[in-house]
Amino acid sequence: MTESSRSRSLRFLLFLASVSLQFVSGFSDDSPNSKISTKKKSNGNSNIWIKLVIILIGLAAVGLLSFFLFKVWQKKKRDKQHARLLKLFEEDGDLEAELGLHD
Image 1 (cartoon, rainbow, N blue to C red):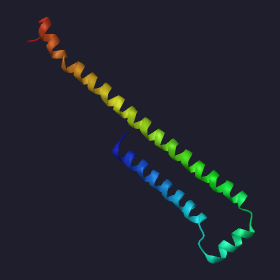
Image 2: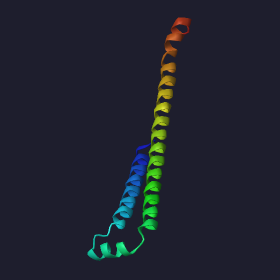
Image 3: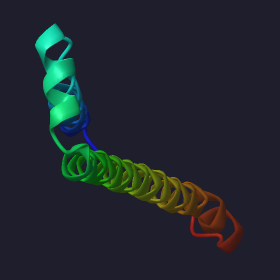
């Protein structure tokens, strides 16, 4: 993963976090009239929507975290394979010396 794609994914995660915080802060209404009006309204339906939004945001965060960790694992695996390949070709000179092919 290149540095630019890492910074792009980090910016995307920060954007999602800020959007989710906007949802959470939008649900709180601390005005005095809201306390009276909430007693008159049925809170059952709104509580379900709040819980549903929070669950969806949590699932999205877990999915994004899993994707990010998978990409990091892929990069480490690729780097390890590349290092093994380089090591294989570095040892090639010793093989030439053993076979008498070296000048």
